[in-house]
Amino acid sequence: MTIDSEALGFGGAERAPYATNPWTSRGRLFPEANSLTRSEFQRDRDRIVHTTAFRRLKHKTQVFISPDGDHYRTRLTHTIEVAQIARSLARALKVDEDLAEGVALVHDFGHTPFGHTGEDALDEMLQPYGGFDHNAQSLRIVTKLERRYAEFDGLNLTWESLEGLVKHNGPLLTKTGEGSRGPVPKPIRDYCELHDLELASYASLEAQLAAISDDIAYNTHDIDDGLRSGLLTFEMLEDVPFLAGLMAEVRDRYPHLEESRFAHEIMRRQITRMVEDVIGIAQHNVQKLAPQSAADIRAADHVIATFSADMAETDRQIKKLLFSRIYRHPDIMRIRAGAAQILSDLFKVYMNDPSLMRSHYWVNHMAGLDEGARARHVADYLAGMTDTYAIRAHGELFDHTPELR
Image 1 (spheres, rainbow, N blue to C red):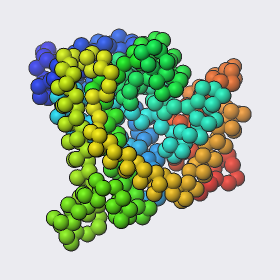
Image 2 (image 1 turned 120 degrees about the vertical axis):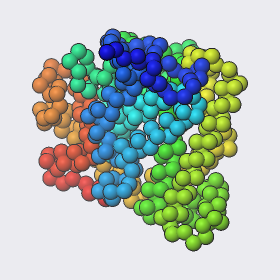
Image 3 (image 1 turned 45 degrees about the horizontal axis):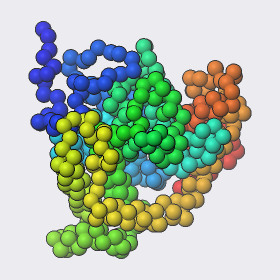
């Protein structure tokens, strides 16, 4: 019996004309037969979820190192929250939910252990070899480092998913070919020589929704985790008028609410207001642009999915609060210094003796590589580590490992 895939109802409700259509995808670098039961973007999403890189996210830091407590966010829980918001936004705007979810699920694959501290440390050590960028590393993982399929390296994702991964935060090149945010990382340039991701244009609306969902998710959950840790207090939140208004609203309705429920009520309202703000602005921008295809979204000279001016100011104020009260807190800075030392020590020892990277599949082929190529493989190995693995690896090689708590 044959399956009528068109009748299965992929994508749910009515699709907007500017939605990315999985049935007219630009395809994959290595051609594959279509699935009878899943759209191309559903297949991408499923491949992403089944990767080693996705599983590793559960032991990678978001802000607080995992030994600090079981209830703090990790890269995995953050990623799931981003994907949930992205699907909600995509559904409201009648674009492809599976593509938005897939970009959200893969967007943090390239993050190192120990959060942005690890990325900063690796970038510093790789400056002589082109630096380190977590977005470029994500692309490297899904096009080269995941080794699951007999016929190709990576996941062989669709052009649209790869475009969304690389450009969800905006174009990487100006119309004249210059880097719009500095030099384009080499892994991205190298891949585009094989499979042009059109770095001078914006990504699909689905990818833009994944990007703004990232902001909404971490703005909210970093406040939640900050309150849980004690680094933030409700009094500190009063410095942001938007948050002060939410707290007043909750107090008026529930004057005797316990602190934990009070915090959750604030977070729920924060996510809802931010999501509704993005939907309203995106609808306004779409109405003004009147796009008739996903190509029209890419050709626009501005982002479609963004905050209003008022919410953008709130976003700035929240980030300022988080930086001053959490990210730059002396306790966090001490932990960051220890984490940076762990990665710096490991980088140096692996560069001197690559055979110590016992589980790295390239280890037997590194003897003939030049220093730059060797450094990139060491970075692959380190970036793929979880927090716990990096701490354990350091403990096996050094007499003293910094205490990260």
